[in-house]
Structure formats: structure tokens, C-alpha cells
Length: 250
Ligand code: DC
Image (tube, rainbow, N blue to C red; front, side, top):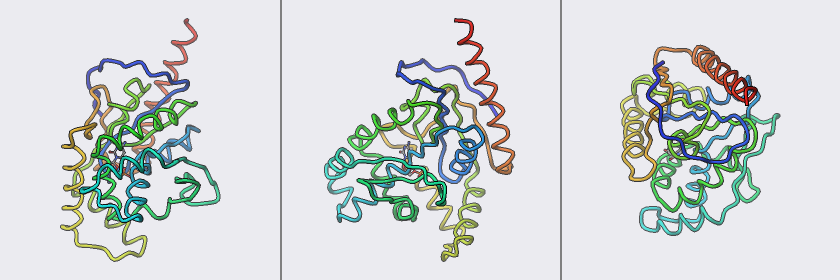
């Protein structure tokens, strides 16, 4: 793990300890964040699910995102998005749009690509910033995304940036598809999809995917899920201890 230089802080009112986890798809971000939220008893906020939900609803209403970005902005502004925990379901953390559970409908490759396109529209990002801050401000939260440490919570208590080689990420994606009994594309096709989405997410004009300077970088290529969770949990607990000691002094 490497740690960069400190970044300028921006004042955003937050009540509890906030953990920011950013990085591209396939680095194990979602599994790691889910596990950390469980062991630390933090609220988990999967910000990618917000963009996926908007992309899904646009697809359902037949909007061409590239031709009609304003329709995407209108929808992102008007839809009511929320997370609810339903411990009996898998995953337990569910995303609802206007009261409808979309969790099982937003994980297709098509929605991944269109969520990436939707997320490059400045008005859509602007519509979702306030919601993400509100969700993260209440109590102890762990947020995963692309711009949590850079834009949503520049004053997060601890920031991580997860990476892994494209080959390793493609291997993991194929294993996931096979485990889910889905028709698996070729290894080369998966690699191309991953590289295309990385390029789109990191080269967009607004809030591109990039490591916050002070984020702890974790290359998960050669690590098991348990090892990643353990390493990050240790850093978070140490930081929580520091935060607590800092508070006691004042
Ligand atoms: O993490 P994910 O694969 O579910 O995210 C889907 C898309 O949403 C991703 O391609 C980029 C976008 N996204 C974003 O721009 N900012 C975030 N904080 C989270 C996701």
C-alpha cells in the first residue's frame, strides 16, 4: 500500500466517520466495501448503483443518452433514489427508484456501459452530488465509487484507491459470469470492455476517475479478498483511534 501527499480540504458538514473507496471496476471494490461495512458496522453506500439506476430507467423509457442528455438530467433530478437494507435478500443493500427495487436489474454489461455514459453528463452528476453527500453525512459511512475522495467527500476521514491489472480484473469478471451461469464472452472481449470503461471513466471532463492525492493505494492483483479486507480494516481502525483521541483532547 502506498500513501500520497495531503490534499487541500474542503469543508462539508459530516457527522460521523467517513471512509471513501474509489477505483475502477473489477478491483474487488464492491466485495471489499460490503465486507468492511459488515465488520465495522458502517452504512454501505454504493454510489455506482445510483448511476446504474438512472441508466436503467432511461433505457426503459427509450431515451438515447447521447442524443438527449437533457432527458437524462431531468430524470436524475426528478427520480427518488434511496438505499434500504433487507437482510434476508442477497445483496442485502438494495437500491430503490421511486419505491421500486432495481437491485437485480442493473448489473448487466449494457447497463454498465450506459451508466458510464450517463455518469459523464455534468447535469446528472450535479443532480446526484447532494444525495450522495446527504447519505454519507449521517453516522459512520463507507462509500464506494469513482470520485468519493476527490469530489463527494474530499474531507473523508480515510481514503482508499483500489487498483488491479486489467488481466486480473478480466479473470475475475469471467469467473463471476461463469459462477452466475451466464454465457461468458471471450477473455479478450472482457479485457476490451474493461479497458473501454476505464478510458471513458478516467477521461471524462467532470469528476474523472482518479486517485485523491492522499488516498491509500491498494493493488489487489495479488491479494485475496480476506487480505485486502484485513489490510484496510487495520488502517481504518487505526485512523478511527486517532480521530477519537483527537476529539478527546479538545
Ligand atoms: O461502480 P459501478 O461499476 O457500479 O459504476 C457504474 C458507472 O457509474 C461507472 O462506469 C462510472 C459511474 N460512477 C461514477 O461516475 N461515479 C461514481 N461515484 C460511481 C460510479
